Image 1 (cartoon, helix red, strand yellow):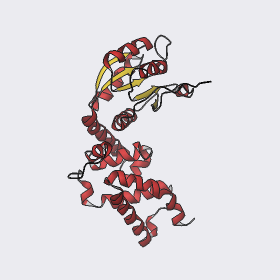
Image 2 (cartoon, helix red, strand yellow; image 1 turned 45 degrees about the horizontal axis):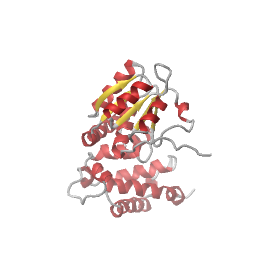
Image 3 (tube, helix red, strand yellow; image 1 turned 135 degrees about the vertical axis):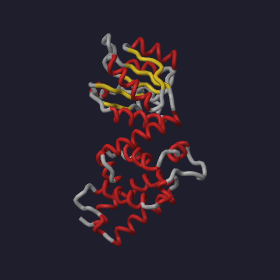
Image 4 (cartoon, helix red, strand yellow; image 1 turned 180 degrees about the vertical axis):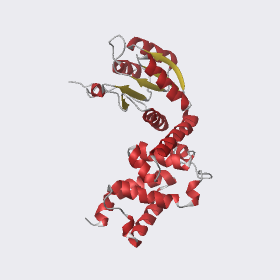
Length: 267
């Protein structure tokens, strides 16, 4: 397969990533063009045995990070969208790590290869990005979880990112009452609760009153395949990794994706 056929399908996605990093499509496209020119001069830089999308992002990162200007936090730019403004405040490498996972959808191992760092170093970047995002959009968090140790673990994780836990609920009734009393800025919810009630039903009832980002953390992800899941909502399977929870919390708050109840079907 020719090099152009390997790279061509990846260019629209790479342009999106470049635009997010640089703050403008024109600037981002200039970096994409620089990558293509580099490959024209030396095609051997592209590892044909690697997955094409990850490989072109890796080469883009080499070009991007070779510029000293891109190693400094963005200052003096014209105000863009709220998302652009938040991105510009993130430290450069953590910003790249966050975008590669939260926007571009790479798993942490592939993203670490793209940035040519070890997995522990990459996890540290994601955690730093989470703290910096938390400093921008710190919010109140409600936890719906019937296992006390898990609830306490989640509390520690979200507080390490700068957020505040306003309460924990073990049943649907407790969750709805707590949400109405505190109106949290984020909800973390298990599915199967202490009295046999459903965290999914609790969340849908809460969303009838107000919109809020929702992250489901459950050992029963199949429970969310019923068509009753709020949209958009994030999903983390148990047992969870702490870095996964931190990354998804940061993503949910950064993009402020308010969940809403599933649409009711009419006859």
